[in-house]
Amino acid sequence: SVLINSLLDKIPLLFADSLEGDVLFGPVVQAGLEALQTAGCWGKLFLFHTSLPTIRAPGELRKRNDNTNKEQTLFQPQSSYYQTLAEQCVQQGCCVDLFLFPTQYVDVASLGLLTLRTGGDLYYYSNFRVDRDAEQFQFDFQRDVQKVIGFNVKMKVHTRKGIRVANYLGSLHMENRSEVKLAAIDSDKAVVVEFKHDGKLSQEVGVHIQFELLYHTVSGHRRLRIHNASLNCSSQLIETFRSSQAETLLNYFAKTAYRAVLDQGTKRVQDQLVTHLTRMLASYRKHCAHSAPTRGQLVMPQFLKVLPLYLNCLRKSKVLLPGPGVSIDDRAYLRQLVMSMGIAETNVLFYPRLLPIHGLNENQVTVPREVRCTARTLSPEGFYLLEDGLNLFLWIGMLAPAEWIQNVFGAPSFNAVDCGAGSLPVLDNPSSRQIRGVIHAVRKQRARFLKLLVVKQADGTEGQFRQLLVEDKSPSGGASYPDFLHHVHLSIQQ
Image (tube, rainbow, N blue to C red; front, side, top):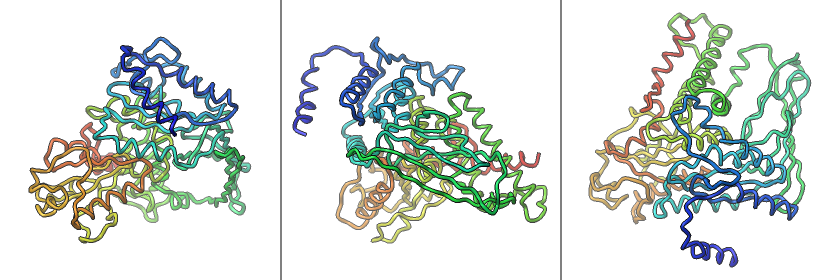
């Protein structure tokens, strides 16, 4: 640690007089890869990068035009260089973690491919400021270094006759059509395996699936982890609907949609989501309804009643329907995160948790039960936390009690509260301890640090908060949940 700290102290001094404004990226990764190859081992590269690599060298990138007619090209790397480099890293067991601190376009779609293919993590701190973002970066970096990880990973899924693996979705590299290979894997990563039924299945025997994961520990020990699953089969379609989970389907549709944007326009991807949903509900109405529904009645499976809500949230997400001020780097970053997320993470990302703090007892420091994510739920006398796994807002109604504002912010009134990112003052009273305790509890549930943003009702900063009220019509034109449900209902009847 002494040598590392000494080097970090010297780097600013060594280049203090440098006038070079251009940077490179690809050769740096190649140098780290060659070091691991020379040592004959696997490992992880931590890269900290700020701007577009424009030096004439391997991996050189140029600013792209966001207004291109071929929107899908913006999510693809500019050249095959980074795809080839990622494959070389996977073969060596070289995982790449990338921390980006851009002030302008940096081409996340190209640079981030290295983390997506090697099983690494991507962190994105736009317009980084030490006084505002240091706590977030420190937490993310510390957790990234300390988490348990496996290297040189091979994954395979075995099935019996009649069912086969059709697709893998996630942060991975396909070695061939049946085997997934990763430089590294950890507990934050999730892979979706899609199966295709192309043969006769027995209701008596069912379906047997074996998941096989082969990897090395950090200490060099070879490990084989096996999971076996036995699933029931049924000739009744209604059993399929009864055993379906809306949250699992949301994760699947999110990953298929976000992969589809590499080849198709976002409008077409949105339409495909509506088509899938309409066909599912029309099939249930036709084959599974217990009684003949009236023409104006919308019939939905018991366990999939929230699926239309989830898919509408997915349709309105930044990747598929960007609002004002959302850059292509923002969209590429979110797209990559979702490709490696698990079910719980995608659930809260697309349907954020709105938590009424004012409903808690004075000495109660627990995460309150969430309420519907719509402006209709908000009370001007209340105060709420809103989180989606990446962002955390504290919303204060304009009629919130002055005593609570004084106890939490040390401010005499609603108008005196400062909005923006930061941390709450540490004050010795029950209200201050309660809100700070709930924020701490919410943060503990997430893999990444949730930076707090304080917003006030009717303030200029409230727009960011209201973008996450996903049941309402979005600023980018996305339909509200009632309007979308009405549209789906009409489509089913046609």
